[in-house]
Amino acid sequence: MGQREGRERDDIDIKPGGQAGPGHRGSSGIGAAIVRRLAAEGATVAVNYRTDREAAEALVGELRDSGCAASAFPADIGDRAQTHELVGAVVSEFGGLDLLVSNAGIEHFGALETITQASRRRLELTHRLIALVVTPGS
Image 1 (cartoon, rainbow, N blue to C red):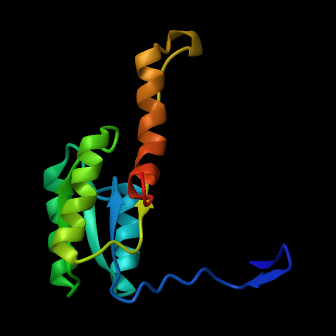
Image 2: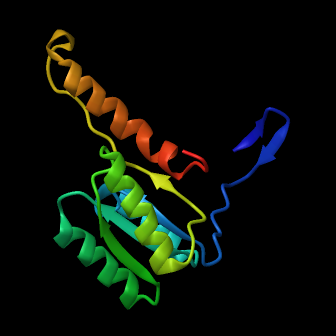
Image 3: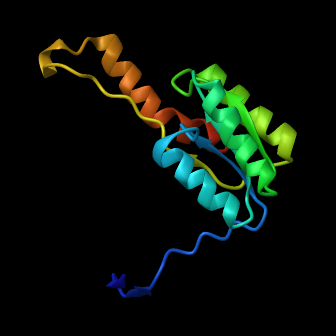
């Protein structure tokens, strides 16, 4: 990657060494690719899903078949209580939480003026809540 702000980086090193972390929206697409990469590097992974249990369980099965410790956890990270429960469940099962990949995202399809206050709040919560929940003291 070359020079950036006085630091040389040739590659991004993802070597979690057995750390546990949930991949939010990790059951498909980019999230699944991130989870697979972390697992390949030796991470224990928690795959979060909101609606597609089948895809999450298939990914967990694939990871376990390759020798990785993995589990799937349902939660809507746009809901603070469910997000707290998710983090608690991951910590309970794996003994800690060392890494978080927040890949969840939602968007509004339509003209800007059609976004309701409730939709705007849901967008903001989904994109910000997980970082707040896993931050100590939040």
